[in-house]
Length: 415
Image (cartoon, rainbow, N blue to C red; front, side):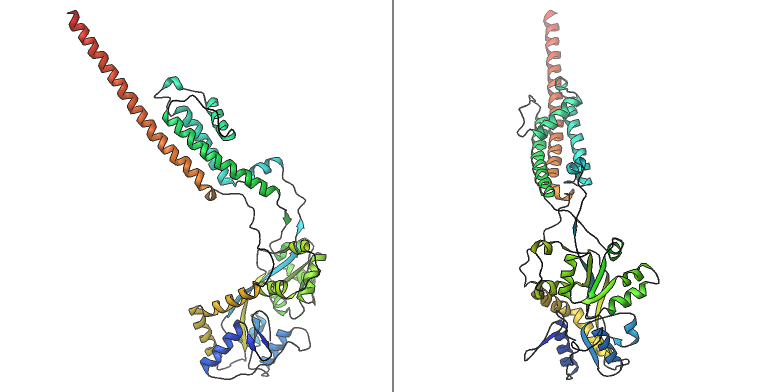
């Protein structure tokens, strides 16, 4: 069965796609010839199911073309080893969120929690260092905590800050490093908060259950939805809400018509991700506006995985040989290369702009530079601080010795 982008045939050109490459390779390896029968134009609902029934009744030797593995199909035919792992995803139209940030959320959202905790710790340590780092060595320069805090804030908010009358080298180093870190932090913060304020926020859903609870109905391809139906019916034993999902699902539209239906109604379309992207990007001539197209969203979570296999007659003697060849191609990475090269080539034929990265708050890892500057500055200031103490003590000792010598000379002179 022809199924773009995995397997399709063109007149006088031959068949293309990764499954066509696999079929050609297996025929050469196992030394056999084959002829193809097209099941795309068969009448009835469920083209893949009709093809599998034909294999089951011996009309066909095997069925290829995006056949997905399901529990029920194991009783009809033998399956090869998994050829390609796909997944079903859901396309729906995102709606604008009515929630607005409160004032405190506008302030804190550009940085994540770990970065805010680090920033507050840095602020606290810098204040303590400014107060105590040279207080022991030079008591005349002692200042209050409040004064040190205002100095740190002025360095952060007033760049460049006014000159402060500190002669201590260690405090000057703290000033310089804190000022450099603040320049980076404040610049990044301003840029990030502007980016977030102009961002449009949509209500997004991550699963089939979320969409169902919020009143969505569902569309699937009119070619065949037996894969979805069989998996949902199997899941109904553990979760009764799948019965309601099946009742809300219809399969009376093709992919392109379904996408247009999604843009105009509270409907979600379920399809394999590679097929969905190929159809929407390369094959559909959608009668929708660019704004409506930009509002189409995909769920982040998979509906369920879909393993592509080939269907063989029950007890077919060549089934094990097919699986062995597929296993060798997997081990060599050849099958992965075939799929990636074909899918990337097909999906790259689009004029769509690249997706914009998510505007999440910055975390601690992204702000390594200013934190490194601060830590290195602290280490240097501590080393200078100990140097100041040593030098101060040496001057004190020298002065004491000088005084002692002066006193001794005075006593000797008086005697």
